[in-house]
Amino acid sequence: MTATRFAKASTLVALAVGWLVAAWLLTRTTVPGDLHAPHVDAGAIFPAGVLHRTAHYDGFLRWLWVAATLATLGALVLFVYLGPRIARAWELGRVATGVMVGAVTTLGVWAVSLPFGALQLWWGRRYGLERQGYVAWALAQWPALLGQVVGLTIALTVLLLLAGRFGRRWWLVAAPLFAAVGAVLVLVLPWVETLGTRPPHDTPVAARIRQLARDEGVGGTPVRIEDVHGETTAANAMATGIGPSARVFIWDTFLDGR
Image (cartoon, rainbow, N blue to C red; front, side, top):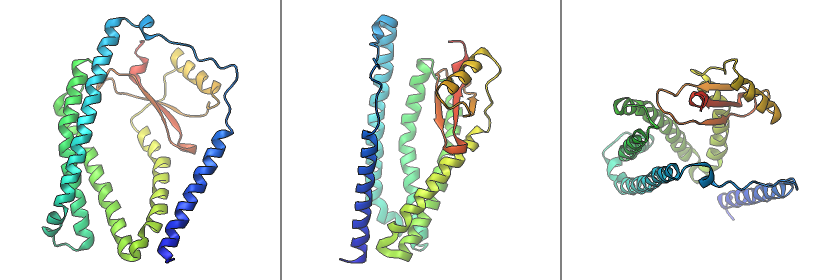
């Protein structure tokens, strides 16, 4: 058995052992015996018109997601076919050419997904959930695209350099490297996302939030309010981060008295 095959086999064994350990730990969890989930009849709480309107809204988005996914897959297949031609158009060396192919592919996939995002915005505006204008929405897409291109450029450069240095064993170095980078991003990004947010005002709602956090045993977790009322009327919240960067973000639309 060659060293590469042995390394691959060892990785598979390690993954299998990790999965078995996780499965065993999962079997050690318990559910309180007196837990009885109540039956909630949506029809008894919400009017039939609201439920019908909700189903119609979700149904369109579901099919829109299917169409967008198929279009994205089709674009990726096309760029796989066009990849060699795109590479021959750039004589920049192995690493630079690979980065350019990746950048062109990213731009192409983004362009294909753009109409579906516009349709989703139109649908949300029709139902009064989105307040953002089409021009503002289009301009807001560029920072995300720039971030994708820059991130992909860095990742491809690292991967191609590792492939040139380690050959077929490149993944043995790339896997732990990118796992470590991912862990650092999960730790650091919540602090970046905190910029532009605010803590809850001293109101009865804020007191209820703090009390709920104490009841759940996470009383020290920072809570931040994100101002999105100018873009949407939807209410949402999320928890993110690990360790010292763990925090909860609540949209200010949650605090409009509804």
